[in-house]
Image (cartoon, rainbow, N blue to C red; front, side, top):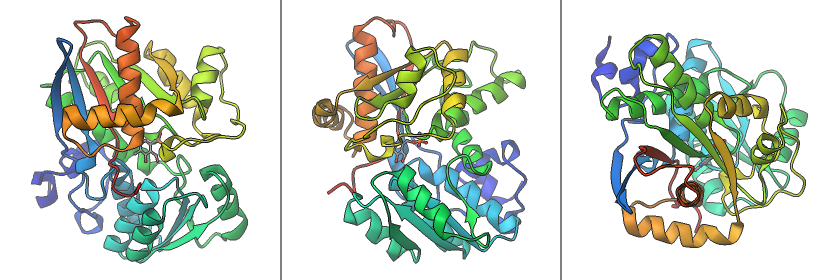
Length: 331
Ligand SMILES: Cc1ncc(COP(=O)(O)O)c(C=O)c1O
């Protein structure tokens, strides 16, 4: 134990995390976010409010652990492609930890993301139409002096995301919800939350059945939804991806088959939301929660409404929706 483990941050779960000595740990106050209970149509729905993180999204959890671990490993320079929020978080944690950082972003990214990355002292490079193309540019340009922080190219971001699942269980008095709904791009949150639940079960800490996991994507970019419903073992690259929910514009996720196995093992599901429903869902969720929700979280909310209407989520079930990020850089 050290002082950080007594603070309201994800470091409280230090014993579930990779071993990182106290002097290598970076903290900007990430994690320990509220679980807000809403009553909607007589049901309890819980919003896990990740907008409360230091840079406004759940990406802070992963970058906190990955950049701290980079300091343990003696890494000096990190690079990643990003749809926006991960780049902002990586830049902030790299700056706090004294590391160099370079972020590759699609050219369609709103200027506020780029500005904030640069304000944190990182380099922002614009390349390609999607995170996949930005990642390809990064692979062409960078030599091995740079540590690759891309989604699932290293094991530590998902460990940070795991704390989301630990917190959800703790905030429900060490119980699992029946359903967790997550707006899905590359899948670090989906897989991290599931990993947390499995660890709690294997320790006999929580003995209840594991929750059903739900991935919500967009009709304009839904590789996981398509592969799940077609019974495929892996996702296929999505042609011509487009959506305003930038974090969900991931046409070829590296962990596609891993996400599919989580959804199947949990008896969960996946569904795609039409682009034209984002704005109304966002307005509605802001009005009922008072939170500054971003478009990705609004998509998850729309997914919950659909599943309730279809009876897939039943009246008595406890549902957690991950409000993954805010709208502050969308303009
Ligand atoms: C706000 C927000 N929600 C959801 C996602 C999707 O996260 P993941 O790629 O871990 O599935 C992202 C990714 O950029 C995001 O920024």
